[in-house]
Image (cartoon, rainbow, N blue to C red; front, side, top):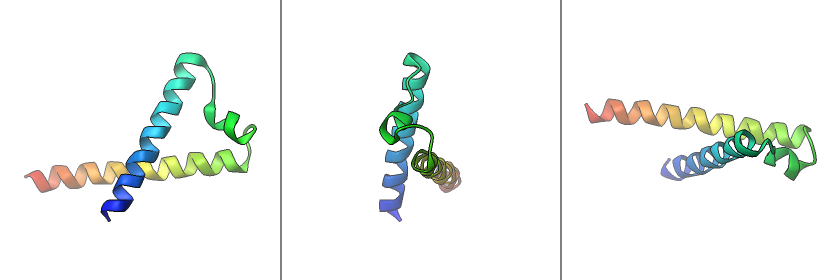
Length: 67
């Protein structure tokens, strides 16, 4: 499970950096890499979203474990 957590964290960080680039420079890196908004960019967005949900679950797990 620790490997999944690390992979999820990496994807979440990549997604956060991509959003930061959109906010700062109005450049969508995902669409640049995939050639526009298509099935590949949707898959990347879905993977990053799932990883974010995994990280939310881990946050609550660690909060519960600290008590």
